[in-house]
Amino acid sequence: MMASNVKVSDRIMSVDALRGFDMLMIIIATRFFRGLNQGADIPLTHFLAEQFSHREWSGFHFYDIIMPLFLFVVGAVIPFSINKRLASDSSKSRLYVHLIRRVIILFVLGWIVQGRLLNLDINEFHVFSNTLQAIAVGYFFASVAYLHLSKRGRYLLFAACLIIYALLLTVPQVPGIGRSMLLPDKNFALYVDHIIMGRFDDGYQYTWILSGFGFTATVLSGLFAGEIIQSNLKREKVALYLLVIGLTGVALGLIWGIWHPIVKKLWSSSFVLFSSGLCFLLLAIFYWIIDVKGYRKWAFFLKVIGMNAIFAYMVSHVINMPAISENLLFGLEQYVGDYYYLVTAIGGFAILYLVLWYLYKNRTFIKV
Image (tube, rainbow, N blue to C red):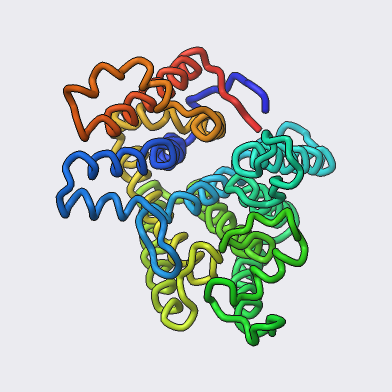
């Protein structure tokens, strides 16, 4: 990771704000709504707390959009970042050095966050088990596709990723189980993870290696959105295209999901279509409000988070910010009662946000 000074005015504010919105959900959403439900304990807060937890298997909760949105936004900036590097006389060989370096850093950061690297115990180490590593895979292949394939070729690659992965989840035979099914412990993707990673597998129902087809498709969907924003279309048309594509993706995901279930833990092809459709819709809303209508002031709060997204992600996972806030706010417990968990969650977020604001104010942005 490295710190750099960036001309903030050169960036697409709606994309930074959307990234900030995603990080906001990662940093505080689960704790916030769990704490709210713990305090209020009414049907509405119970519903919200449920929506901000992952589905056990098939289906979709709002919280399930967070990881795809992270990958989607990474894809959305690929056309801008690669074109900028190419314009500054970077050769493709130098670009590949940058891509590989970024993949390695993201994998190491993933090991720190959820790979149990800091335990310093090889028996507890997980090779592939984190969002940052999924980003690394999708980012690398989507970037290679942007460098070497035509726009039509990238669309075909997106479709191929979905079809090939869907076939891999339904056609092969799983030893001792039979034909692969989109069910826990009965799918070919999980079998491949167990075979390749062995004792370094994360031991959960999430799949990673074959899910790389889905990760790549998700990042490609963001890349397509970035190309639309980068095009010469009027901003109103850009917002309309994003909206229509989003609605189409959601519809196709739901329809395909009838036969090929939407399962986040498998990153199934129907999940890719459905979640990417939602990502397009969110980007359409943010783009319309910020870049078309010009309502920008409200988004500053999110932009501060989005400009240092990786830093925010790492700190929120490695350092227990709510526990730090407890050292400052413990006296409030006697007054807030069951809402104390909510108070410490907000306090922990406030501390992290002050750090992010300080970095933003000093134009210091941590990049990978």
